[in-house]
Structure formats: C-alpha cells, structure tokens
Amino acid sequence: MLRVWGRRSSFNVQKVMWLIGELDLRARARRCRRCIRRARCAAFRAMNPHGRVPVVRDDDATVWESHAILRYLAACHGNGRFWSDDPVVRARVDGWMDWSQTALQPDFLGGVFWGFFRTPESQRDWLAIHKALARCEQHFAKLERLLEATPFLLGETLSLADFTAGTSLYRYFELEIARPPLPAVERWYQRLQQRPPFRKHVMLPFEELRGRLDY
Image 1 (cartoon, rainbow, N blue to C red):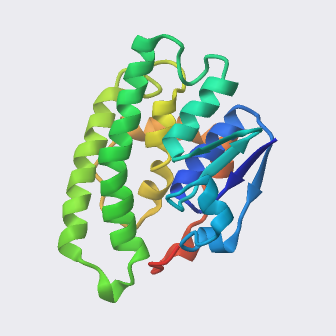
Image 2 (cartoon, rainbow, N blue to C red):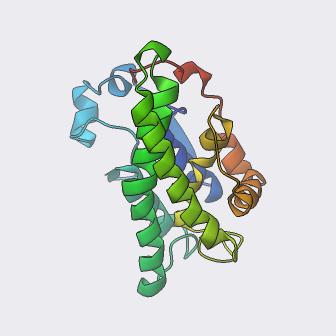
Image 3 (cartoon, helix red, strand yellow):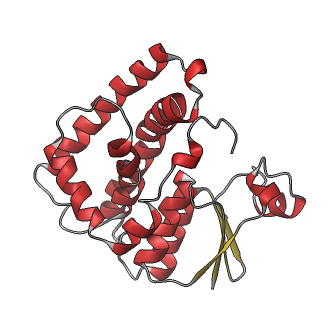
C-alpha cells in the first residue's frame, strides 16, 4: 500500500491522488500536522529535505515533488498508461508537464489563487493579480488551441500532461474572476469531470483556504 503525506486541499497533492485513483492503487493518507505546517518534523525532513508535500512512500522507495511522483507512479504502476515507454512520445508529455509547472501553475496558483483567494481582501495587490490573470489568459489560450483538435491535451487518451494542467481547472472555473471564452478547454474540463478520481480528488471545496496565507 502506498503512503501519501499531504493534505487534501493541496493542489500538488491533488494531482498525485488523482493519478493514484486512475491507477486504482491502494493508498493511505498520512497527515502529520507539524509536517504540513512548515514541515518542522525531523522524521518528515528525513524523507524530503525541502519539507514540502506531497511525499509518497512505495515499499522502500520514497519520492517527493509532485511531478516526480507522477512519473514514478506511471512508470512503476501504469503499464504504459499516461506516460509512454516511447521516448519521443514521453518527451512531448514531459514538455507540457514542465510547462504546467513553470508557467501555468506559478501564474494561476501563485499569482491568481494565492493573490486573490488566499490573500485577505485588505492585503490584495490588485495590479499583480490582474497581471497574473492576463498571463493566465495567454496560457489557457495555448491549451484552447491544442484542444480544438483533440479530446485530451495530447490526443485521444489521458496522459500525465492532462494531470498537471487539468488540476487547475476546478479552481479556475470556480473562482469569482473574469475569464475569456474557452469552449475547447471547457469541453476538456467536462470530460475530466466524468472521471470519478478527478471528481473525488480534485473537485474539492476550497473555501477553508479563503484569506489564509498559512498552510
């Protein structure tokens, strides 16, 4: 059985739990309060020196960083699903995974979700929020063009690229923010909503995080 350290409302934990659900793996959540809050627990830092969640332990293997965990789980338990054994196909998936982590996630999760939702209203930097929203519009426009021809990001089937970018969709469409028309992205979102693991692990209420700057 996998052991997963994290909290259900964590964006990066949700990616991992979604894949665990798709792979139909048994997993036990471990929620050490001190680990979640600043990760001061020595035992937790022995597993991940950066003190961040998620962390997954699979038998003797301990893996940290959400995208490393996704690749590990797909490689060990996916039997070719979600992350191909073909290096050419895999490189295309990796490219969009890295783009999600270095472009979409910082601007949406850091700039918009944190700047708007998790920051108390009196402390919001509206100039920075609007700039982040504008960058997000550009990011989602790229996904829109990609999805005009395919049901999932890279073709007819789900890949790790969908996990890394798709985890943003529930919060993006639920926030009280202005959004441009994105018909292809919305169709993609509807397809993901039809998947039970996505509904169970990603479509979670996040009101508890409103105005909270702590973890």
